[in-house]
Length: 432
View 1 (cartoon, one colour):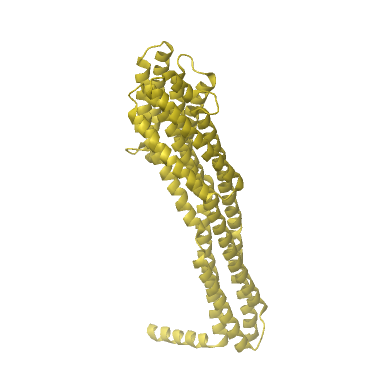
View 2 (tube, one colour; view 1 turned 60 degrees about the vertical axis):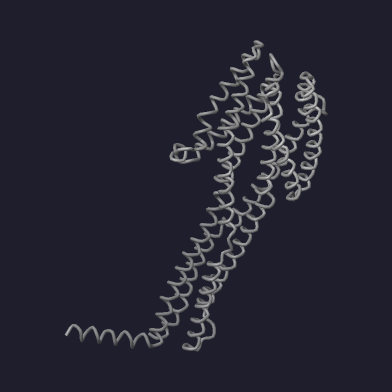
């Protein structure tokens, strides 16, 4: 008996579904489901890209800056400490201040990077952050010991200074380089996520419009009504949502691409050029600190100088801003001056004229190695700051392009569902 009743109910529902009211009711349910499901999936896609852009703005972007600042500050501190040691006795106040500033900036950037990471990232074996945090106090202690011995005229100071510089090169800088590479790779990954074309959302939007078009034609044929205000409103809302998503996605993708070409790609090359500059300077001064036993440091200078020349050429080819081009051109000119000054410095040292070599290394004359290095470093610093500004500006533009997309897509999905239901319900009333 139960089976017979169930069969009759099924037959009744099937018969109802074949009637015009039944078909209109089916259309209503289908449009509600399609509109809300497509809206939900589109919101998820937009949210994923918006999250990637937010990561660029507040996480991976700032962390890559912090990582580069750690590397640069440590390199600068090492180069400055060697220069200060060459001064003998009481080093110039500005040299001491520059060293202390480098250490302080590295420590500040390190604290920022540690605060932004999970505890497991810091305590993991071989963690760059842990290595830097542990070895930086050891390095500064060696530098202070070398400084104290140097002020007293004790030759033991040179050994401590060499040990400090060795620690910097073998432990601190490799860890800082690993950290920078990791953060730079994360910036690139976030850019890839943020720049993706909203293909899935586009297909969903076209599908919704297709369903609405089919329903409108079917309703028109069954009710002999050409226009249905509710369905037309739903179609307009779905079309607006689709256009908004595509325009916002394309605008955000274009801004993210620009953040790479005008920002992060140039920042990476310029940052590596500045690091090569500081490495070459540290090697140049350490060669003099070593007093005849600095052949490995001189080889290091030669390699860093080779890298610097290649990176400056690459930076010039990537530059998209006239001011940045001018800074790079000035940097290349200062590099040429530095190379010539280094040649004179080495000639003096190799001939036994140590005093002249030291003067060529740390003197105030514009033609000395120290002055050329300072100008070159300043050129690269200014170029980096400008390209970082371009990166931040483009990321802000991408955030702006996506900022209202989630609200609009959600609202239009609701309007589509409500308007289509209202439009079909009015036709259903005709069958009462």
